[in-house]
Length: 572
Image 1 (cartoon, rainbow, N blue to C red):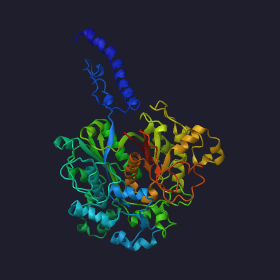
Image 2: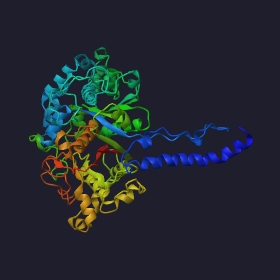
Image 3: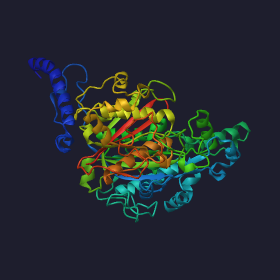
Image 4: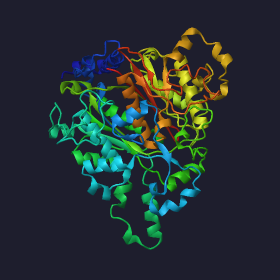
């Protein structure tokens, strides 16, 4: 390169870098308004001057990252309502409850004597007969001897999700024999169809399929029992599988090993936000072009005396309904007194849109946005103004191309705790009262500022008089979004909650039916005065969503340590 050319290149390179980056983000921002076509952002970016070899020192500009559309093509659920998507969804829409009294046989043998002294004796457990039958069908008997329960729950959900997506090696085995109400037309759980799918399976496909399956706090029993053996001088009785059984990443590892998946592999552990973070991280991995398909979700299995004692010491669990277990979890209700712990797993198959369409996959919906935030406030209590919850919901919307007018449903994190439900409801109210521009043109404002507007905080006076001062547009928006918490039916699945509830939100979009909030007999007057008017908040059955071509939903998950996440899911 001539000296003059080098001089010109040095002058032009900063401008070229700026233009390349600006073009990339403008394309991403215009995606929704362009009719949802993915071609504009799936085409490889032309090599710009910013990527040309530099004649001077340094590596030059970093090329802009690709932005690809990500859809959900398969799902698997193992919950207190049943094993399998169809059974779980059927019972959820019917207003049935999966909670029951805790029995001695539900606890490890070494802990059974503690049952009568537990302040909370209600739990959401996976039906044991269905669980054992699914383990038998999948040939996991040998695996169960060296695996923790949370690993087995994840394997069952992953098998159903991969079979539903028709993706993976070998034959897909059904984990349940239920009907297909919860499925797309191509669901395969009623027969032993091929897991290969229309796209074909190969070593290259395995390398482009990854796993992000997390776990919150399982294995407390394994640790306690091993500790007792060690302290009693019986180290040789500790299982050689002790360490693999307690590692949080072993569910992701077991899925990867079983199916030979060699793509990105990780396992978030962020308390009750784990499932949401797992799905969001998988979304980003595909969006950046690091994989074509991701198996993502979370599992949890810590229904034991140790976990019950720990949460009871925090005064987080319900204690008033031990004799009426199906009434114990009552999100948003004035008589709520704490959450009910449950176990389960939710796994989704996320896939790049073009890849899914090329192989003819059935699509449940699209992952459109992923918002994260931290409260920066307290180890267990959410920010009193709902600042973190509001911020993560807004971040899920910003830059997504989705406006509040498209939002039809919010699956709330609401766990049935007195403070947490009120704070989240206040944050949702503030979100709906302050619209974002469709392409995220409104800059994010500070959480403190957001919390002071329109009575956002629970201490701001959410009174009927204040509500009567709202204009017609604000009233329409508040009444037009269905909001519900499905934890009244499942209990709080801790780390697995976000993944299971994201599946519920996707099913709500696909079938245009939002599941109800159970046990909402007496809406708390400290919450929104227009509570019942907000579609899905009500003690009745499922709520019909608008039959629009375009429907969006948010799924919220918040965890101890002040970690918050919100997933924006839409129709395609």
